[in-house]
Length: 404
View (cartoon, helix red, strand yellow):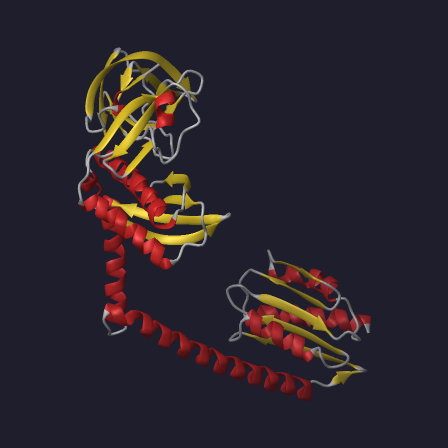
C-alpha cells in the first residue's frame, strides 16, 4: 500500500521515495512507490502531472486490487536506482486545489440557498461541473448561491483535512456521508462545510480566488452547473472580455449595447431572409415558366435538359420539383462546379425510372455517387464544368428517348 502524502500536505512539490514495484504495460514503464505526493485520478479529480528522476509522469492511477498508486512514465527506459526524486507540476496541482475546494463551497452554497443537493461532480481539463438534484432553480437562486460561495472565499476561512472513523463520521453533520467503513478523510471549511473527500485542497478559502458559474443546463432529472475557479475563472473572464470588446468595437457600441445590437441585426436578417426567399421563389417560378414555354414536347412528354453554374443544388432541386408538378414532364438538370450534381425528376405520369437512369449516367462524372427512386434521383460529387455536365445530360436524354 502506497503512503499517500498528499492527504496531509497538498503543498509539497518535491519529495524522495523508494520504488517497490516496476511494471510494464504495452512497453510503458509503470512505478509503484512506497510513498508519494502524486494525486491519482479519483473522486472526480484529475491526476497530477510532474516528473520522477526527470522523466515525465503522464498519468497516475489507483490499482483496485490493493490500493497502490501506480505512476505511468512517458519514457519507456528503465529506472535502475530504487531511490527516486519526485516533482509535482505545481500549476496543475494548484488549479485542482482551487477547483476542488471551490466545488465544496459551491455545493454547500446551493444547499443553503436552494436546498439543492450535489449528486455528482466532474472536474475535467477545462470543464468542471456539478449535478444538482433539483432542476427548478431560479436565476435568482443561482446568483444567490454564487454570491454566498464567493463571500466564503473573501472571508478567507481555514480549510482543514483530518481523519475520523466511520462511527465518528455518522455523528457529524456531513453534507454527504460516504458508503465506506474504516477511516474517513474529511475536509472542514470553517463553520461552513464538512464533507468526506480524498482530494487536494487549499489551506484557506481565499486561495480559491473566485468562483463563477458559467453555464446551466438540464441534465437527467436535475440541473448541471458548469463553473470555474481561481486561475481558470480568470482565463475564462479574459477570453469572454476580449470577445465582448471585439464585438462592441465591430458593432460600434459599448459592451452593454451588444445584446440589443445583435437583436436588431437578427431582426434585419430575418427580414432579409424573407425577402430573399420571395425573390428566389419568383426566380424559380420564372425559370420554370421559361423552360416549360421554350421546350417542345416529344410526343406527349416534355423533356427538359438544363445545366446551371450560378445556382446551388438546393435551388435546382426546387426547380426540378416545380417543373414536375406539371403533367408528363421529365427534368434532367445539372449543377456545375467543385461538387457537380445531376438531378433527375419526372412527373408521376412521366415515363422512365430516374434512379436507373442516374446509375447509367453517373460514371461519366468519374467517382460519383447518388441514388433515389423512380420519380426523383440525384448524385455527383467530383468537380465538373458545364461542357461535361452537358454531355452527361445528352447521354441521359438519348437513353430516355430510346425508351419512349
